[in-house]
Amino acid sequence: MSYRDLRSLTEMMRALGYPRLISLENFRQPNFPLVAEMLVWLVRRFEPQADLPTEVDTEQDRVILVRTVVQFMAMKAHIKLHAKKLYQSDGHAVKEIIKIAAVLYNAMKTNTAGVSESGAGDESSALRTFGIGSKLAELKQTRQLGTQITMKGATLYDLLGREVELREKRQAVLARNLEIQEVEAGLKQSVKGVNDEIKKVTNNIENVASNENNLETKMEKKKVELERNQKRLMTLKKVRPAFMDEYEKMEADLKKAYEEYMVRFRCLAFLEQLIEEFERAEQERMEERQMATKKILERMKQDETLRSFEEGSNEMLSDDLDTDDDEALSPGEGGLEGENVNPEDTDIKGKSARANRPSGPVSTRRVYGSMAGPEDQDSLDSDSDMLLDGDSDDDEDEEELEVNEMAAESLKNRKSAKVKAAMADLSDDDF
Image 1 (tube, rainbow, N blue to C red):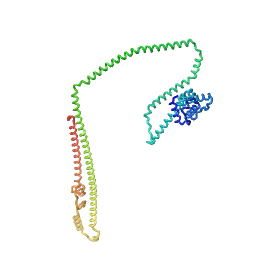
Image 2: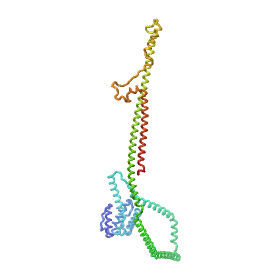
Image 3: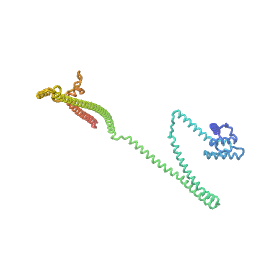
Image 4: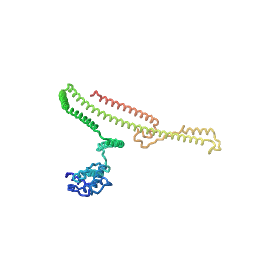
């Protein structure tokens, strides 16, 4: 027993919550009641429902208690204890009790560490992340152990299945009387095999010196070859090739050419961007102009329909007037009824009335506008110009559309010519 083991046991039992105080002097002399109480308490920590004997008055009761504790710990916790040392109940028993107490103490430390980490994680963040990267090695080891356990279990199952047959053979072999001649022959064969192995080992030991010499010669050859190659490498580094000057000069020229190329490439990209923006602005301007032209044409069509509708209404009014005059000049109506009317007079009157009335349908032209006059005499938005000019406005709109299309085509041709000229300036001949 050492002072360190006894101190460790007292600290572990105090941390685990053992109700009794353990002194350093308790194990100077054999103290079986204390050892038995500690063993029962530790076993109850592993399994509260464990059935253990509590009487330690006689020697037989003590032996039963120690054997029960040893079997329980071997089966439940896989802890191998020395029964004789536990029965001595002195400093030797301390080392065996520490095996059980250390397992419980480590489990308690792990549990408290996990609780503290979880509490800190809850304070820092509501969701605790679990990193599996540090557990990959343990995962591989666990898989290997699981495979081994499965294989061992299958092997054990097969062996247990053959146990009935093998038991009979084993008992038959054990019950058979040994013959001295067979035993002697077996021993001689074993001795012969051992002698052969000894000869092989001695031969290998004798050949070690020769093998060492061969290896040393090979190492010297490799060293000489390494030194030769190093010298050759140094000479090759010192020699300057004949084409190195030209290579450096061409490298400097290439660097300058590359810088110039990059400058021109950036300028070209900037110009292409400007051209695209200009084309986009021109396209938008053309679309706005076309929309304005369409609006003007629609307005002119509306005005033409309105004018045709007014002319039709005027013709209808003139026809109504003609019919009213004819009825007024016809005989037998009004104050002429009952009188003799000369047909020649009626014809003359009708001719004079028709001569005074304007020939053809009455045409009226309505002019829109203000008395102050328009501010811009050339504006196309003036209703009076549209109505007075008529067909000439349609011709002008068609001509304007044709002019706009021709201007757009010429603008595109100029842009393509500018791009081709810029690309020709940046050709490889300039470098």
